Image (cartoon, rainbow, N blue to C red; front, side):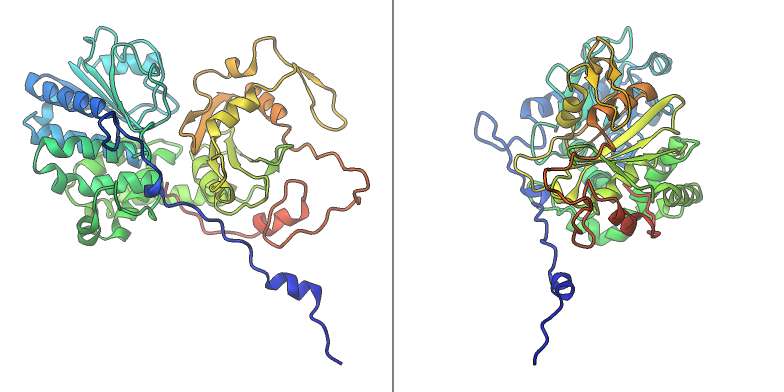
Length: 469
């Protein structure tokens, strides 16, 4: 008599359905009025930005570059600095300002520091955009240019500034790719001098699996000359200093700008030490188990670290966690800035093919807009009264910043806890009539918002850390 295969073996032989993620470069583009592809930004903005660069060089006056702190922002700044020099502006006329930890270009402290350079022209790269006063008080109108790709409305820019943004021209280019394509026609040597910087910045934001196919420029020669391995190592090393507790972004800028070949960056001792420091910190906090929002759409990890490792952990777990409802991985760090919570969100890989697509910014704002004013605090806890002013308004301008696919923010600890109550993080779903007391066992490796036991399959085992991204 033949034996039938046991149910457990039959189940284990079934493979998890593969999540089909569209290639980034295949994202449908939009058209200009004349029928041409609007990429990497609206043509009118590209023309205006190139004219701005030419005016800055022809003025022969002081220029200030203010790049963001990551591989994309620093590469953008380096590409622009090389371009200005190639076009004839002396290096001594070009200053670079790196923001302090936790600050933005809109804080009064940074505005005063930028004004101290007494520039005639200012370039702000990859910093995100929002409305406000002029970048620097007293600066001539239209003497500040914002080069960016973060989500922004047409009026989301400082007063008197010009802008070129890739955020509404899919597939959205990184700031370094936008800057490279902006500058390449301005001097024949920009391409050979800056192609590797473009790759470093783009891989820093979009990952190393991005395909350099149209509409992206052809980078075969660059990847062959410098090797993909070396360029990705540069991404990891340049990102490391800004994640350390000392926030030594200047060393990353110097390492990137003082060389013409990526091989030299790979040998920088300060960057190598910073990466080791960050890897150790990631490993220390990465195995924290998440709690889920009541609707199961958000997995929330709470960590405490003086290092900026929350984006790394968010990216890591977004590629691993799976459930039918899961859309967003949120990692909150209450140890980075005093009395603040810095948090990063990424779209879970299992939700990247959703239709309609997941929009993290809209989702965060929706949770912050939950009504009524009395929020359920969870089983056995009293309901909590909220302020009359809506939570979304109280969270301020540093909430839900960035991209629709990769957002985050900096908010007070008190307001973040209120947001968690709105999301009902950790609240167990009510049992349906007739449901058994113990949950049905799920397939191995699949995380369910209502299932606690299977979480330790993920968070009880060490995993090799990485500081890139």
